[in-house]
Length: 366
Image (cartoon, rainbow, N blue to C red):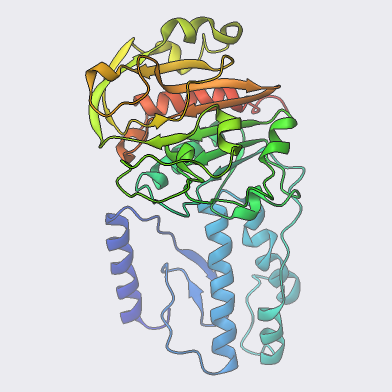
């Protein structure tokens, strides 16, 4: 930003964005003798000359690196490991191109690709996958933020992304995968790597609408019964979404005995163990296409006699888990509204329980 008036405008824009819940940060670093991001935005006219274009490219790169570091929890994207590291080597001292720098060299550097360092020796990774190719849930940012926080608290590097290649390219290996409200064809089922992920005994946690992905039609209201176009989701979780009535308030029953005793008592010391037996809860309650397989352990269910629109009969699960071989799989069907992901809510408690199941605490294991 150049000029005091522009700085004041940027600061006012920051205040407005923060009031609306946006994450806003400034970067106290220059990418040129007059170009910086330290007011959180760049004020520029159409970049005509080579130096201006160079500055815009470098500013965009630096901003992308810090978004990766602060928002996506990717430490390998920190500028000190990427572009700033190169600048320090090139220019010394504070790593800022001097006024005397050769414009053609700066132009060349701004176009030169930068590669991230290999992070294979870093913390175990949790992919928080959020691609919504069809219906977009407003609660997804809150859900992803809660899941990223839970993963980080257990010692994982949380990567929040909607990049389908992360579940299609076998070069990406995740210690746990969290599917948050994905919809439509969120990734190519013919290229998917989740099957191999599960075969290796790695965990998968599903949040709310992930079972409503890969459907054979569209219906924003959710009322129309739909079928799925791949068996991947049902094979993994044990069932697939069909439809749902409008959001409503009913009683969610916690299966306390299952929490205490299932799978050798694995949940006996989990957050779910402290839950009451029932909760009055306002949410979106999915109908599924089948009863769960025998290996599924139901941790919470609803009773259709207490509301209209259920199609599963007396046994209507909402939260469950299972083992696919040695791979832990957990699903929480609750969570349509963003407020449900606040700390200590019923949904957050089940998600934390799911992380306990799917992602062992690694903070003290290294």
